Image (cartoon, rainbow, N blue to C red; front, side):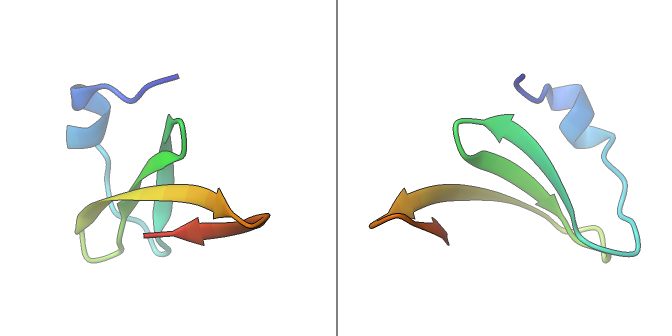
Length: 51
């Protein structure tokens, strides 16, 4: 299920980083200081990698 713009805007920081998955390996990382980063996750040679 894809994230909506409203869900991204209303995401609040917590004590630990939060991952909100968008699908297809893309997720929104919400840091405790309030920073929001889009991160892609993929597999290479059978191992999980992240940019």
